[in-house]
Amino acid sequence: MNLIIDIGNSAVKSAVFQDAKILRSYVFPFENFSENFQKIKKDYPQIAFSMLSSVIKDTFEIEKILKRETKLFVLGENTRLPFKNNYASPQTLGKDRLALVAAGSLKYQNINLLIIDAGTCITFDFKNDKNEYLGGAISPGLQMRLKALHNFTAKLPLVKLEENITLIGDSTKNSILSGVLNGVAAELDGIIDRYKADYKYLTIILTGGDSQILSKRVKNGIFANPNFLLEGLNYILEFNKTQ
Ligand SMILES: Nc1ncnc2c1ncn2[C@@H]1O[C@H](COP(=O)(O)OP(=O)(O)O)[C@@H](O)[C@H]1O
Ligand SMILES: CC(C)(COP(=O)(O)O)[C@@H](O)C(=O)NCCC(=O)O
Image (cartoon, rainbow, N blue to C red; front, side, top):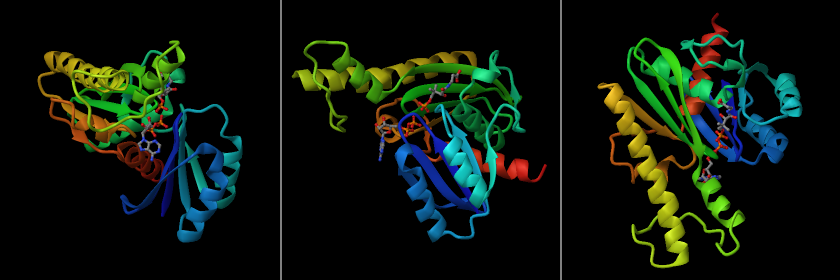
């Protein structure tokens, strides 16, 4: 049994895997790692391996716990990956993006693939049909945009995301929601269209905490999979176990 852990800038996402299937998944704050780990280990004492990907600064304590209780793999620059990395600064590339491309390279071999991860930031990652990773883009996420409007103005309130929004915002709150949600949906469609112009055959994955709310608003055909990153990390773990 594998315990897979993805530490993003907003939350920890974790899942217990057996035979490439998720038995259970968890979302919790980074500060509560230790207590959540103990609960998971109590529910699944068969966990023998763990895989950690993190984009935050310090994971020393977390690694200590995982090393004590499991055989730990930490996703890093030297991890064996199933694709060629052409990013010009591989040492600064987010580990979450590495994991997404690893999942894409194994699941969608010989296919042009654009992976969009809507989390704290929205990342775009492209790998071609030769399994070469070329890079992509980093853009502010939904919550970041809502917070920015509040933090950098005198009068705009901090608005909570809502499902039912209109194109024409008829109040301050609805104008903000329209600007942020319709704006991101239009951004995704616009960027996808530009990739499609360059790559006739293109598969698109949408993942991340905000993938559900966005998938309904994107016009292009996409596959929404909230667990794509965790699945990618599990692939990398299995790939490295057998090397
Ligand atoms: N249960 C939840 N807990 C936290 N964030 C959630 C939850 N459900 C949806 N979200 C959304 O997920 C986003 C964070 O996505 P996530 O992929 O976890 O980001 P990151 O990988 O950067 O930590 C938040 O902006 C929030 O809008
Ligand atoms: C772009 C990110 C902040 C996204 O993090 P997330 O939104 O998933 O928390 C992360 O992938 C990162 O820190 N990247 C480093 C820069 C780069 O990938 O080039």
